[in-house]
Amino acid sequence: MVTYCKRCLMPDTRPRIVFNGEGVCNACLTADEKHNIDWDERRREFLDYVDRYRSRDGSYDCIVPWSGGKDSSYIAHRLKFEFGLNPLLVTFSPLVPNEVGAYNREEFVKLGFDNLLLRPNQKVARRLANRFFVERGNPKVAWDAGINAVPVQAAVNYRIPLIFYAEHGESEYGGRVLNEESRKIRDFTEVLEHQIGDHPGNWVDEEITERDLAPYQYPDQERLDEVGVKAMYFAYFFRWSMLENYRYMQKAMPGFRTDPNGRTDGTFTDFDSLDDKIDPIYYYMQYVKFGFGRATRDSCRMINNGQMTREQGLQNALAYDGEFPKTFFQDNLDYLGLGENQFTEIVDKHRNPEIWEMRGNQWCLRYPPG
Image 1 (cartoon, helix red, strand yellow):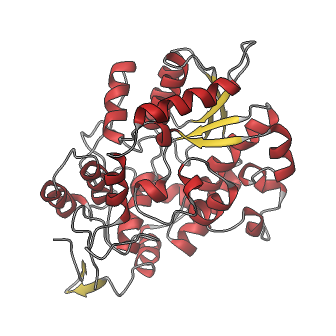
Image 2: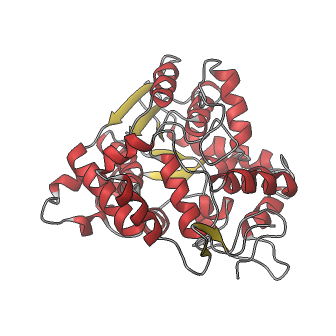
């Protein structure tokens, strides 16, 4: 049996989510807590914090892990133009870059930013994407390691002690909060447990050496301590909303591009996770493994922020969650080195029989949302 949150739509199949005795998930409870936060006091705490790190000589005073999308661009824009910081934007390249993401990145840096972009060895990246798609149903495991490691590597190498990440997903969207400080400060323990799942050093095989894995490796603690690197969540200090972040970017960069199809495969939105052609497959596999898709994800985030009713979210989920990621399908098959039949076999291998059943010749959820 699958239980769905009575306030939003998130099922208990989401990894690490917790429900209270009234059937409400901890993401909704976190949303309730935000009403009691003194956001003016959080802003003062933020200003006090950044003043300790503010550059006095024009050098970089913070790093923003930056994809070019609405959330990281929103953070970078506010840091520079509202708070007077000089952020260095650090990008770990998408697996399969697309035109929308490339355009948004190029237009944003024209506003006055420096950007360090790392495109890793594609022989290694493609092998890892294939391996983890087959083994875990997730082609982005190594990419997750890269986006966590490379900004921290840059912080150490450039001796920039402050990093601003977006939101703490475990508290914001339902998960396991390691401790109260986890809502504000990001550390390597959380990266391993919640972002990657294991240590990249374990990925060495007959074709991949430890040297090949350099872009995916977190710096040693000694080097972090030497520079005094602190990684903070911007959303701890300022109320977080993906929809409001997008609206902010529409004004800050009027040419900000969205999905040219009017919405993205698997959901009703056209403005989120646009820079990588493989993202629709990533979210489709979330639906396959856990029984909820991208439309549920997007709807729950808006429900939590009072921007959508549960009924509206339910309609979105039923309409779009199971949509096949067709737009870049052949590009992704080519990148992963798979044929269509191989792809289907791998997908079906990752279906949880407790939540899926075959009816006729079609897979169906045993317990659809309602």
